[in-house]
Length: 229
Image (cartoon, rainbow, N blue to C red):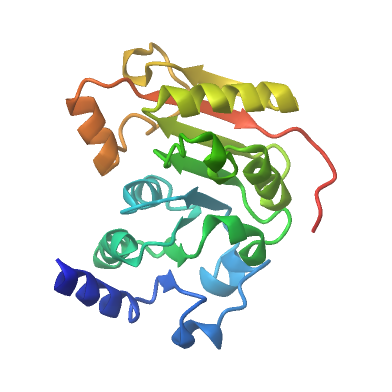
C-alpha cells in the first residue's frame, strides 16, 4: 500500500491537470488567482469548485456533463486526487483540473467573484464540537466562499451525516442565507431541479446507499454582503 501511494505521488507530479503550490515544480508557474479560466483553461467559461473532492468522481462527472464549464477539484490528499486526475487525462477532459491545498487557504488561490459555484460532496462531518471550525459549512468557511463566489452563485452539499446536515441548515438560517432546494432523502424525492445530482455518485455515496443510508442534499445561496478581496 505504501509503494502504491508513493507511485501515485510520483505520477501526479507529472500530471498537467494537477496544481500543487507547495511543490517545487509548481511554484515557479503558479499565478492563476483571478485568471484560472483564461490562464489555465485558456477560455472564458465559468469556474466551479468541488471542495474536499476525494477521488474526484463529482469533479470529473460534472466535467463530462458540462463541457462549457471549468471544474477544479480541491483536496490535500494526493493519492486521492490521482484517480480523478488520471481519469480526466485519459478521457480528454480539458475542462477539469485538481488543486492540492488545504481548504482553509482557498482565498489565497481564487480571487473575489471568480467562482460560479461550489460543491461539497460528503465532507468529513467533524462531529466533535471542538472541530466545528473545520466543518466545510461553518460560518468561517461560508465567509471564505462568499469572498470568491460571484453574486447569486450556489453552494451545494451532499451528505449522509444528519448531524452535519442539520448543523448546515441551522447555520444557513441563522446567517440569513437563502435555501433554494433541500431534501432529507434525495433518492426518494420526486421532481428535482438539479440535473445529475443523483446520476453522479462518489465512492462513499455508493457505499452509503448500499448500507441503506439516506442521502441529504441542500442547494443554497449566500446572502449579499461586502466581502474582503
